[in-house]
Length: 411
Image 1 (cartoon, helix red, strand yellow):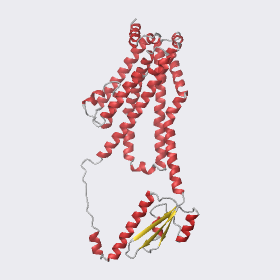
Image 2 (spheres, helix red, strand yellow; image 1 turned 135 degrees about the vertical axis):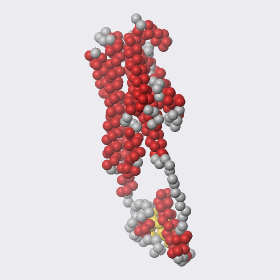
Image 3 (cartoon, one colour; image 1 turned 60 degrees about the vertical axis):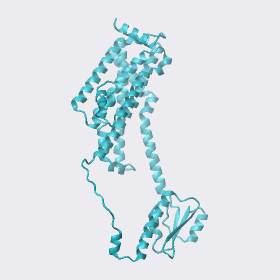
């Protein structure tokens, strides 16, 4: 038992100390910080930048002050057209707009500048002019208050929703599923590759013969698994704690505060479906795929084939990942119900039913029991033939090495 824990500690320490683990765990937070930083700098630069377009109005109905309120691109400083021309020549302004009113009552705006007016600024200016033109038209037409009220009548529409909140529920189900399945897929993919390659390299370098001289194959196998499970738990814990802290920091202030407040109900429903029994299914899914990867790594003949060792686990994981997307909109189908109880598939399909709320507690418990029993049976059986698999170094076929490993386990 002491030997097994020693192997587990060494495996855990080796994986945690590697740069790949650091980059794998920290990279999502780095990307989040970069995104927030870029957004913050962009908003600050846009809010702190000086307005660059002057407004000169020759009509009392449209004041320059009113125009500057439409967008930050207009300066609030009043100036004459001659001053604006001089500033434009000296590059102190990007341009200026002269607003006039023709004898017919029509408003006109003429822009002169060193660079083209942006689409957003132009849209804001046009909207303001249309509103001002409408007010001027009403004034010139000399309609009475009653006539104006009649002309301003608008149709109305009312809605009666029988199942209020259904749209939000569908949204949170989709978001929760995508976050959970994508997280599960990449963790499975990463650790399946790491496990298979590490065991294949141990076998290929013949170091396994030295290890088996001081401990049993079963202890080594379980020690490896425990060490890798510890690394996985560490990564998931970092994501949970880091996500919790990031969410609470974003709620305090910043550009995300309003977005979070407006969608707080939806966000809490999504989080609630991530940190529940679904997280256990993800963890157990990683465990069963890691065991399969350890088995695949033990069947590799030489260290050069370490990159191919995780292929079986990756293909099964990819198939489950892609197949689950086909049934996200049909959580009550027979296929979804069956696959939610099938090991290697249940980690992807049972969360669909849990999020949808279409499975009972007994169904969830049965799926967990089947998955745990399968994991235990696989771990025990593979550990019993592990020495026979690891000590083979010939270049025979996959099936020949597998059959010899089975014979060794039956001795």
